[in-house]
Length: 147
Image (tube, rainbow, N blue to C red; front, side, top):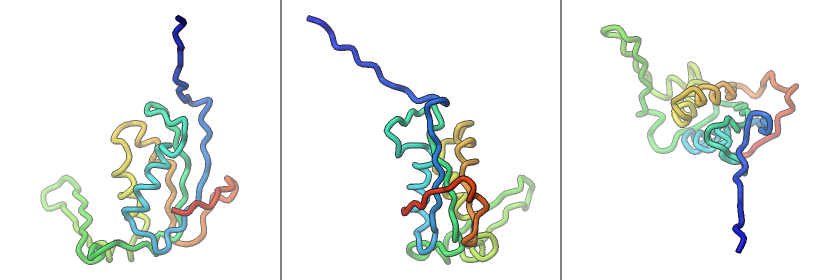
């Protein structure tokens, strides 16, 4: 009897193709949208996903100022930032942060869902968030993606 011998194909930097996607954040829930986009940044939507290779795509988010939260999170969710010095803890409610810097909400949500290592930092650099409807990445010809 002959044995069947199968080999698993692993992706590498030469075989991976990085696509560009543009996502409209209008009336999207932060958590649900972030989870789906984090998977795309990791490359888990591809058949040749390999954990030790950056297979992810580039993601552009527009209209980040029109996102929404579920429940009472808009009034109750608190974002904290600590400088490292005594008395250096700054807190801000999601409603105020959305008015001041709407990109930060999505960036922090997606960054928290990526791996905490060198590859996670590399994946995070492929995320571009803009408050308005315009973005400077038209030369990359991004495809529209509905989340």
